[in-house]
Structure formats: structure tokens, C-alpha cells
Image (tube, rainbow, N blue to C red; front, side, top):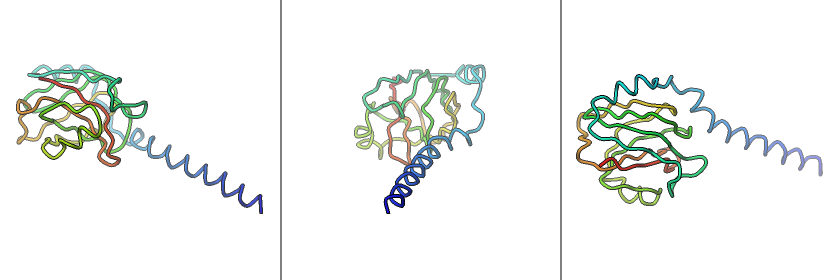
Length: 156
């Protein structure tokens, strides 16, 4: 009987670990090739706003963070840096800076969802035509699937 419970416990732990590793590694494995630094630099030439993500935000932790600089033009957001890998990242523009999950949830409804972030080292995201970045003050990257705050920064 003890062998059976030990079998269940060890195999249950292995299954749980495999599941967690799969959630973490799958976005990395299926991510498209990230734009190069020169592509991001070229994309940011028309920038009207800029800012930087930092790892040490109150809502970030060792699994959810971003670090690097971004620029925003009328029609795109360009980012040069790194994000912690994860599934279903979305970029939002907000009217005020939120530095934690709770703060973002309070303003999420009035924020503009700009689109998905599918690479973790650099990205270029085309903004929808109905979003004017001048109407907002901050940028947030949010994991939609798990409701997790990744990073945020002000840009004006």
C-alpha cells in the first residue's frame, strides 16, 4: 500500500512540474523571431513619447517583469529590452500609471488594449487606428490568461 501512495506522490509531483514547465516554456518555444536592435531603433525614429520599464516595480516579481526602453509614435510601440516569458501578454495604454495588479484592475475598463506582445526580447507593435497615444500617460504589459501584472511605465 505504501508503494502505491509513493508512486502516486512521485508521479503527481512529476506531472505538476511538467505542467508548470510547459506553461512557462511553451510561449518561448512558439514565439516568433524578435525584431533586431536595429529594426527597433529604426522603428523608434518617429517617436513622440518614450519611457523605460524597470524590474523593481511593486507589482513585478522574479517571474513577472520587464526591463528596457520603449518609444511610442502615432502608430506603433517599439521596445528594446527583455520581458519575462509568459503566455498571452497584452499591451495597454492607460490614463494613469498603475504599478500593481490591483491598481491596474481598477483602471482596466477605461484603458486601451493596443494588442498582443508575442516576443520577449524586443518587440514592435502596430497600434490600432482608433488609439491616439497622446490621450494616455502610461503603458502596461499584462498577462491576460492569468491576470498577472508584468510591467508598466509612464511616458508623459
